[in-house]
Image (cartoon, rainbow, N blue to C red; front, side, top):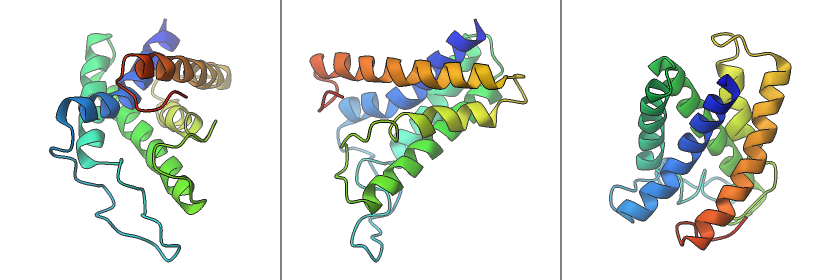
Length: 159
């Protein structure tokens, strides 16, 4: 049951910024990188990584954790670590000149799920097998949900 709860929190953490973009459009979409570009000419994270998305993701995950019977701080850790993983993925994708919202199979799913599991492994007594199960399950679920969100016109591209 804990694995399903963790998977649910990861879906909430990573899905909230997408939903927020559809609800708010460009309102309150301040870029995390402050429009900073590095020597390679690419933005630090890119235009789709916003303070709004990160803040709403962390809050939504915190609330969801409480609703699932987990301590709110587990939601805080998972939401924050998932967004850190997402920022790391975006940073790497910008360095290899992949356009924003482009897909990098594995890079788009693994840090966003692995970082949170590593961050709360001791608090939740997660085994290596638990962590691998959650990461693999998230990888599959994220790809399936991405296609569904595309069909529902919530996501711009099907992955």
